[in-house]
Image (cartoon, rainbow, N blue to C red; front, top):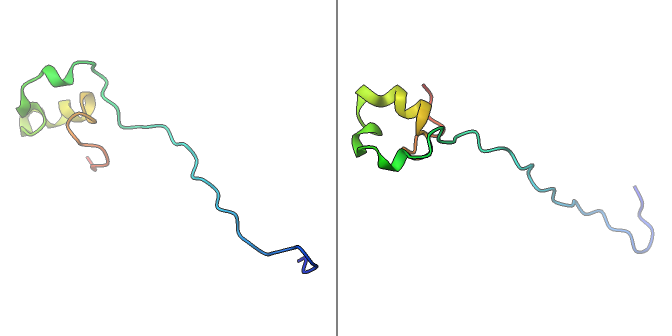
Length: 62
């Protein structure tokens, strides 16, 4: 460790890596479906597979 004049021992923050957004809609028209596709248990798997971002299902454990 350098302790001479002009040297300091500071930690330099390192930015977090840019991780790809893994939660994306696979369909371009999720907003055009009826609102219940995001909340109905009938469409739960379909919503996760096709409109996860639109339906706010990112990060949910299936």
